[in-house]
Length: 311
Image (tube, rainbow, N blue to C red):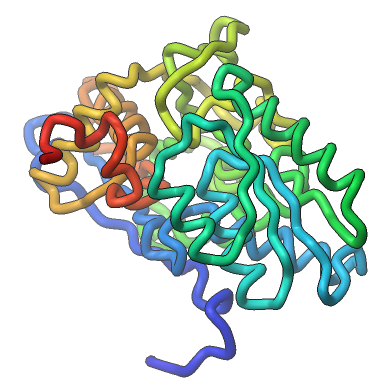
């Protein structure tokens, strides 16, 4: 039933789960995707942006007129900027200079201040810069998406139950990319509590195989692979890790749009590629594989994702 909401943060969550109809047509397994770009700022990070601010308000750490500071690859920053604008907080965001133009413009459109850090330093450099800013800014808090317990908690409370309800408990494999680790840890924990046989797969960039090989490195899959193991990543939750190349991520994101009408970003391509690889396995015949599509493809127009069709 339609209703009127008090502010934009109240419409976060409740995103749809949609079956693929073309890409898995001749495969043993079945793939569905959870479209997180249906959130108001078009990404899965809207959930944690609101949850982190809610927790800070409740604890008294974030006071009226305060400042929210965070190191972000883009989507969490956009979410925090949206929440800050809706609730009257100043937002300062640090991010690697490699992040897309669209993300920077969106952050500024929500009224946030941006501080760029060297791309070679990855998210670690952005996080360290954010800490420096908090230390010298009055009435400021660090959102700390990588170790703030509100992050996995909101996925346990919302994302996991939504998947369970949408699939009527028939999900067999859950796949999510690892950025902060909150989605795979929180939603994965909830799903395993409902059915311990559910397999949880984490996805990371092949160019930064930290979870599989212990090696971090620069990569082009925005939103994944922070180049350090986040405290919010519960390594006891996932059963396997799939490393995905930028080439496979881009190719899958493109065909997802052209063949399924689902325009996801580069990290969506990574997650769906991993899901399709699982669907190819004979042991997964007739199993339902659910992958997270974290954000909308329009956010990547200036990136490698669409470089062949721009012009």
